[in-house]
Image (cartoon, rainbow over all chains, first blue to last red; front, side, top):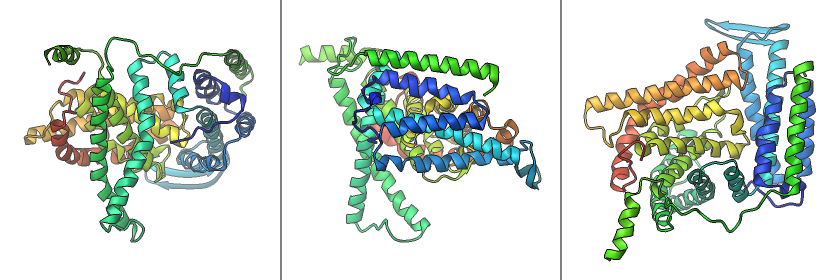
Length: 259
Length: 197
């Protein structure tokens, strides 16, 4: 799960805490209170500008495709209710109904815009923050030591898990299992043959991890020390203040003008 | 040897959070997160809800095997799977709480490592159903409050479907997986006898 890539944008130099605060929390709140598609579109364009500014690699841009598909699929929910407006198509199956109207389309578009804004903001956070900085950022929020350690281990093991699955797949190849031919059912059955060995490989690995952590003294009363522990800089203070101000101004405007 | 065993025994007797608690969170998070991650590639959706949700099968098991720590792992696992597809966990607070409930409720109500009798099986299935129903209610509330999906659609279509994708799937498959895996969990010492660890 290597979403982070090093670059020289200002966002890359910010502390993990700052980025979680700005892109994960503050700016995430704004679209939640927006109702007008035009306002959401303006915000989406602003987020796209920031996204382009961090210059993600082409491979990372591809991640927007499944998110976009997900947003469109989710927005279909709105076609199962009467959201008002001019009705174009209406069908009923007993208790359930399906309707395409101007109201339904408007709500669906609003939903897609909101989802895309959230995803862009979150990708900005993930693309510019290394897993270590992410964990240090979470720690600064006051999360307990055991939880940050668990998150950092989970992030580390995620890529190891993919490696384990590939190893088991290679072993199954050697035994003659073909994952590339056959119908969906046949392939599903063949992939299911990975489940048991993969699960046991994971559990064996975790048992070793448990021993290693115990030997390193995890859970003892002594406080854990860090070699890498960056502090908040002037850029961070400036960025957090600006984001807080921006969110407050936006929420005030929203309160009065229903943007 | 005597000198070594004393600090070791003191360490084992500690009631603090230890390595095994952290490993329990990580195991649950990774296996649960990976299962959700895989299911996200089959985007058969009803609203924001996955029509096929194999992760629901694992949720009660981690709650029973690792107690509170397994339930916490389910939340971490869901967050992990969200990270990869660019979904912001901050917008799904009740859905995350739902993952916790799916493990917590069966975990707190069923503390056995084996299904020894028919009574155990019935008890197991009931607590799994209870956890799933509570979890799906929380997911539905998240849809209404945060995703602003109309309540009548959520309760009549999405929540109703979740009873098939989550509750029914878990009620059928979880007991089978539990029977098959529990012996190993017990023998390897990974099983938590007490809910709080």
